[in-house]
Amino acid sequence: MYLTGFADEAARDLDTQIKATKELGWTRISARGVNGANIHELSDADFHAVADQLDEAGITIPEFGSLIGNWAKSITTDWDLTVAEIERAIPRMQRLNTKLIRIMSYAQEPWGQDQHEEERFKRLREIVARFEDAGLSALHENCMNWGGFSAEHTLRLIDEVPGLQLIFDTANPVFQLDRSKAEPFPWQDPMEFFTQVKEHIAHVHIKDCTNPPAGETEPEKYTLPGEGQGKVREILTALKDMGYQGGLAIEPHVATVFHATDGEEPNWQQCYDSYVEYGHATNALVKELGITVS
Figure 1 (cartoon, rainbow, N blue to C red):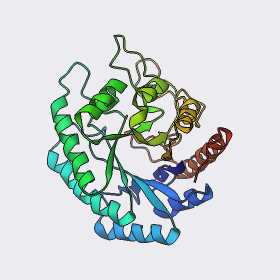
Figure 2: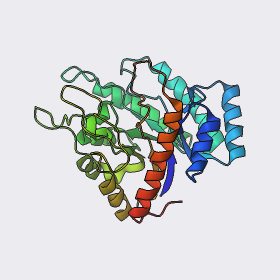
Figure 3: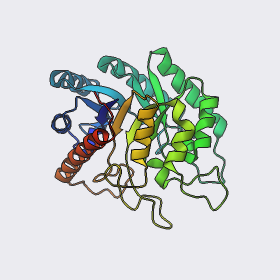
Figure 4: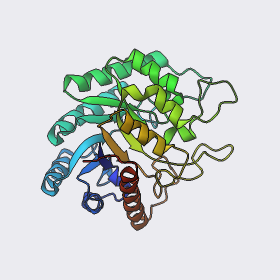
């Protein structure tokens, strides 16, 4: 296995993201926000400067955390917007020798309303095919999107979208209701979700948290790995036992929550310190579990 992380949770600017990564003894960043924009939304000039800076620092990018079909986009969003994101992402992945890109299955409509399932399947087939044609892999994450409704929904995507593989996020089930079960819907169980989809997992996001308070949708708190309800230890052990050789990308959310919309400016020193603490805790956890990382 190898370790990487969403270093935009440590800082907006790439200089500081690289500093945090090296402080952890790592050589990889999961690219999402870079210098204030998603990596596939930077201007061409800014992207080329970023790519050169990464080369000079000896940092590689195993994963793009893209905006494609994410939790902020309705399934009724203009398809041309998604096509433009794909067309910007592909050459940038090729420049950075990045093989994986995180996608989603568009935002969840309120439960009980039309979820436009066939349109979701159609779009994901096209998204996956376009990346496959370029020799790249589009991986679906179990976030606040249609596939995140339950493990059964994710497996339906696998059935409907040829070639689709998964990113599994350990904490996302903790604040998602399991829509495959009877009302009142219980919170999803991360280990149960993992067990059902594990044969399709190609990449893992390490995050941990506790269930939301009654009536809320965000976790009560985000925690260090192994200290919440994400069953991180159990899932990492299962990955080790099944011979998983892919990435473990930290996505702490401890100091910065990317779903938040309150507009408050983060305390970036706190974010940096929190990210580095989280990375060191992950280093210690994988060592404790006897997981060899490269």
